[in-house]
Image (tube, rainbow, N blue to C red; front, top):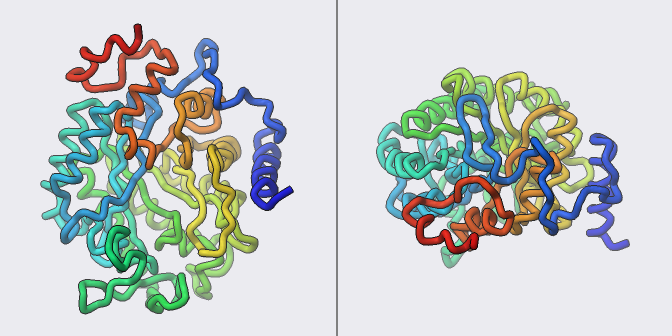
Length: 401
């Protein structure tokens, strides 16, 4: 058995142990359209989370556009979100948005660290809302992965020098993410608590800007995840060491944000559910952490993986991260979102119908095809209203003939 198949088998066995399902795959294939059982949810079933109802279970995953100046949204961000709102997705989550200037991944990322950012974001949320989708935002601090050039810069991936608008990255410790990169500055306890406050202030601004769903980014090796992962966190104080200390920053951030949100506003958290490396963060850790933050008012875990190290061997393939969403949903008793190489209508529908996740988040597939929800609606022969703007729907009726 090769390494990739070994990992896939290990994931399946782990999920089977927590969910009581067969590791051999007794579920119907996600490549075949299911016959819906009475009362069974599907991809086009509405999803109610607190006071917000999504028209379907399709969400646009937060995807950085690297097209902002000083954190401000512009026409590109409006066009990016407008196309997917018109295209029929239920939830659109704006890219990782810096809660402080040095919390951005690149100098070209969105920000929400000052009130002046609100009006431009409001243009986006007003359009999204008017066309039936729910606007969400991912609040983020890049930590030691910050101050990089955007991907389409000639020096993509390299760190931006301070003299060119960069900054010194920060982290739980002074441990580099990659050799040759800058040594991050270790955050003091007062600074950590200040960042917790910045998450709360950003959440308040997000509500003022018209976002109805808030997601905290604690994945992919960015600041939140770097505190959680033993591969990245070498602190010896109350924010490092045992699991209970490494999740302290997560718990404090969740409490601070939940305290300022309206009761009806859902709060999501994105996890890297495993580091894919021995000695790193695991699915079991994710289940424990999910239980803790569920009690603090988190409504859904957005389940991704990886990002703590460049040495991970990740078995990438269709549905490769879905077992983590399934395991957390079953064992922590909290709603989850599945993400990663979900591209086909029957595949996405089966994830929901089989109870493996409550929401399907799509990234690159919605970049390729903004109207993917409408195509999925046609392929699944859904009896719900067409998930596409009325300005288009009238002209596309023949697609169901």
